[in-house]
Image 1 (cartoon, rainbow, N blue to C red):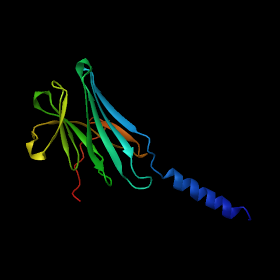
Image 2 (image 1 turned 30 degrees about the vertical axis):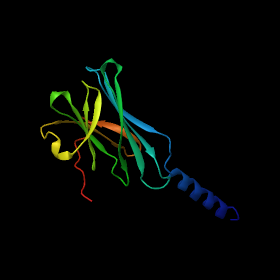
Image 3 (image 1 turned 90 degrees about the vertical axis):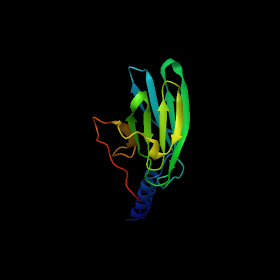
Image 4 (image 1 turned 60 degrees about the horizontal axis):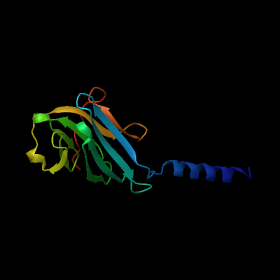
Length: 151
């Protein structure tokens, strides 16, 4: 009985530490084989206990071109980004509060207003947490498009 209290305290400490966010970068990527293009969103925790993350978008295109942009940070369960194929070979990375247009031909990433986005697009997948809270890419064949919640 004398060891029961320290054992419970140690178990509680281990559970608390397991619940902590790591500040180790978590990249999730998708490759487009015909174009030899790769899109990666890297998530880094900024708070050990709350769902707060910085997000960085990296595009590596044909011929080795590369472009990067900081995305709107996750300030509380809003890190998911949907990926769409738009006309003229453009890619859209759309989050709850921001949208980026990737132009593979010019190897650029541009912040745009939602109202400027083409509505006739194809959903390719999304960057999001899985059941284990790990950052990953879900292709459209694995998970359907999820709407963004109004908060």
